[in-house]
Length: 496
Image: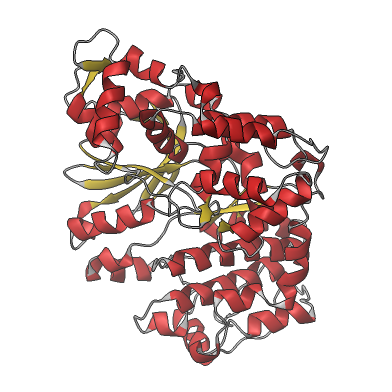
């Protein structure tokens, strides 16, 4: 996990002060979802609004939302802001301009077909990778279903998915859960979840049901009497299903074998690691890991080195602002870097080890020495965890000009400006960046950025922070070391 201040901002008040609704996605008694636009940056995001009365304890809910906000995985939708009003909890998340699995499957069924086995494997592998990550951080999704999976990139050769809408069922009141469970049949329930037990194996069961659905266009558990909940749930508890679906779509041996190892008693159910090692996913895993298979991943080396050097030679305040801004990036802004991260993360654990980094760098830059690669790895590994996390990779390799574009920087200014007087005091800035930063360096840099010496940072001064450069940037030892890396340019490059 990237060592940073909690990226979400709990705001007491009305979200309408900072966002305007531009479209309705879903409106129900227990939850409404809207497309919204930031009044500051004009960034398009998604608003999930839930009545406060649905929750048992708001403080416990806050803790869970903080935990969700710390998720650092490219296949999971990010929480941006949380507004707590007198009547509701309003969660702002990133917006993915894609299509849900439910809508995509519906359009395929209109053509009398479902997802191909290759595309289904690509989608399913990413779901399991994301679940492996969240489960390792003691986070259960709780609502894996077609509606909560978004296809962010429908490229025929590649397919990138994002998981949305983590359940917060442990915070819901019993009355709300009873109401929620009465609305429609939940075909994704595991036998144990029907008995009130939810854990990582319930997520895996739901993912197995989803795999069956996208391969056949129909749920595995059906009833001759349409809408008979008791019959469906009884079949789930008895693991009573077969592959003779109503659409007549056949599933081959390998996916059937995998599904039978997931839709089964809990004690026999595969875990995420075992699923990823299954033969059905091995072939698609190999194809997706070829770094030179897609020509749009062969990109210029020099840009990456310049981007990294610029970050490495940034001021302390700049680096911490970059961290906050990276969390607010949209998928489209860092799409190519997402694909590169996937290529380098050979073991699919959501991080890049020194071994993976070394292998990837050697394949692209054969003239680099082991020492040079190790030095580069150590500088990207910001929190010294011996692994490069997703956010660390994006932070170090993204072109820093993106931080200076648009108005997202003023969203950060607005968060810091607690007094709403269009200027940030020393204490407000310090609280924004977190109390773990070096206070001596922070004070020294704050005084430099306060150009008119009035003791505050104005909006104009705040934006200028991102363009400031250290006077002796080319003379630093780290820059001298990095200059060595620029030898031996190879035509096949991974980084932008």
